[in-house]
Image 1 (tube, helix red, strand yellow):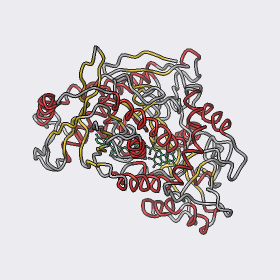
Image 2 (tube, protein in one colour):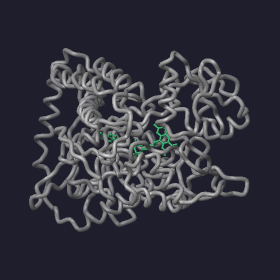
Image 3 (tube, protein in one colour):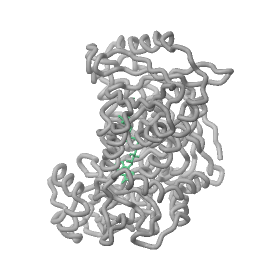
Image 4 (cartoon, rainbow, N blue to C red):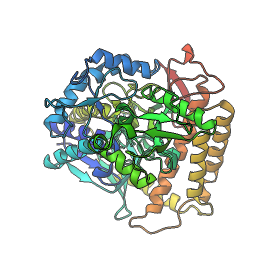
Length: 533
Ligand SMILES: Cc1cc2nc3c(=O)[nH]c(=O)nc-3n(C[C@H](O)[C@H](O)[C@H](O)COP(=O)(O)OP(=O)(O)OC[C@H]3O[C@@H](n4cnc5c(N)ncnc54)[C@H](O)[C@@H]3O)c2cc1C
């Protein structure tokens, strides 16, 4: 049986692994941390499916809500497939043991999230992602799937296959030993999550969401699309950027300014709510989430994690006090461009989850649709990769490919470390928050691009102070920073060229949507942009 690799052990990677395994493939999962720590465990609000367990609902309404929120930038076929597959995806999660919250009559409970016309999000209290991730992990372990933890993906290894680029494995840095390892595989699924950590502390995301897989795929010759669309979540805790889930507003929570006034429909799509908060904050207002009226019993039962996080990080009891919030970078709609079988333009290289763009979220993702995407398209990616591997005739030993990977890592280690890259990262993130965030304009975008280019030019003066081999966190963080820097330039180029406003991309200097931009931005590693329907 041929070997196969899956990079990333979040929800998308684990679903893909299970489905490839079921299709008869040998599966190896690689992750830079441990599977149970993947960002998927942070998802609180829920996973969408039109089950009509609470309100009258239908897959057609789910499709319509998704397309509306996407601002005409999602692919109808892909959205239709996603929404129609949703009830089956929930039934499967239920069958493998995800402990969904239930209604009094024993059906899976559902709640309403922003932009949805019905209570559609299935949930497990506000620990939905955690329960899903841990159940998937249990299944993978029970199925005997191999995990290589603490392996940092460096690059994809490709070869020329009858004038077409094909993948034949990956190079990783074994964090434990500090050695570069090559792992051979004739199909590879990238499932490394999004790139919101470009915003560093102004992001709700896990520290692992650095866009590593997207950067590596681009370097290998894949294309990325729609990188300029970065969703801000309206309600992150003011001090720490930790998320207060939409489920709080779904349950009836209000948004208030310092005067105690409500100023927006709390369940409008995220781009609208974030802009309304941004405008209030620009007037000098502080913004609060108010769930006091829901009562302590309800909060403890339905929103226990949010109560805990507010106490821990803001010293606030949300049953009695207002929760101070701000918008923070939350979800990246763009990613590795894939077709409806999750295939990139490189033979054998597939992508799923937040690192991929299946064109289902367009300019603004609906809450609850990302967990759905990782299940529905994770399955597609797993099946596609298993089928590809079965048909592949690649049988060359890839040892000979090792040298360049070792050399490029040695080069990075030889950088002079005169400039502190951690400081540069913080500076860049602040610039991104101020100018590449909720509101943007061409002039500021150009200024940030200039800064990015300057940092890139002096990258060889950065590097690491720790030269040790084992568990060199300093080195990994530098490699992550390099990937984020690389992606920053591509995000900026995409945002500058999209001379209009659409969903999460709001250009103060061009505030209307333009028909000419009803297209996806495609970008390659050199920043060459084209547009596709
Ligand atoms: C706080 C929060 C709340 C959310 N709530 C919801 C919600 O209620 N509903 C919803 O639909 N969506 C929600 N989302 C979004 C959703 O959780 C994510 O989009 C989704 O979980 C992404 O899953 P993934 O498998 O693509 O990536 P991840 O879960 O991010 O997993 C990526 C994996 O790749 C690994 N990896 C990354 N880089 C490398 C590398 N270089 N080498 C090796 N491994 C690597 C990571 O270690 C990790 O294992 C939320 C997001 C956040 C941050």
